[in-house]
Image (cartoon, rainbow, N blue to C red):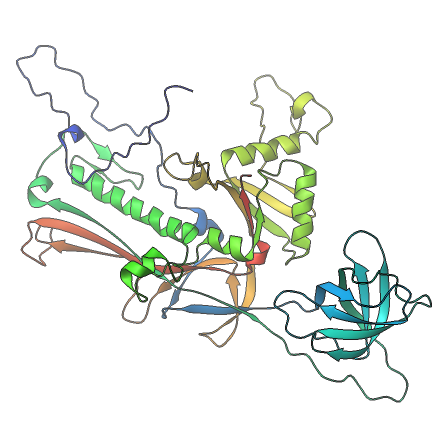
Length: 460
């Protein structure tokens, strides 16, 4: 389409004549008619809303936020091999799963063994010995082991069996939590205007998204700085990444300098689920997503925050489920009145789980994620509700939203959203600087609990 959309920023570091109507030639009989009020051609330009919809904010008084999440209740090894040949009555299996230092199976437990690929053989047996990364079994079937020798297999315990008059189970299992942490970052901005410029009356009435209006241009600039800072507060929590050990950020500032923070996208890529094959646009695609959710926390209600193309793909997918009209144009409940607008969009759907869809402005904005090609994020799936975690500060289990912001605060200092005025203009009297400087500061971190329940949708 032409012409292309404009993405050149209108905010600069100085007051320019272009911010004012400057034709003051009163000898010209053809003076232009001027509109008194500035036209808001881009509508609401702010993108901050995502975290307010899905999360909460709560104080923290430390440089480090830590929490514990429950581990799995049952143990399953997916990389096991046996040196015994098919038909053997007993066999010793070796566990080769990454990160496993010792097998936690116990003597007397009954185990299910299944070949991973290349066949459908499976066996059931009782464990007779456990040592390090190996466990020995005796098979229940008369024909012995059916899985071929050295074939990668999966094993999990389904119960136990003991003879009459024997001792109980040897050994016990301890619950093991997964410990996660994140560090808050300090976010700053400011707006500065000289005392002389504050006295300059503009000829255009200016306004901003939060309702500020007037003929003084600096009022508009200060409010736009505030809106921009609020957007930064959200985008920092979404896009943040930690500074790696050998990174330039740490090299420039030292180990106690710029450390970064774990943002939403980074956390999902590390501990969550990533769909990297383009937008899921068929029921088969969503069935694969649902099967993955079954293997995670199985949260019933989920929110889909998507860009425009992803939203259209979901609408088109759901429309094709209607067999009563070409291209799905008859879906919905209405009387087909010729004067009624046809609704071609869906708010959500249910297939095993409840999915609610909404557009995420941040992914559509042309000056931000909108139109990004490399590493494009098309949407995120966020579980609704809250989860129980062990709060290290409180020293007990606490209910927390899956997604929430922790900001630094104490009885004497609250750094959730600080703003103060310095200088000698605009009512300030803190220095001899002939200007008004409005300062903004926040210190915060995003806590993504149960990241295994989140999905990040990226382009192929």
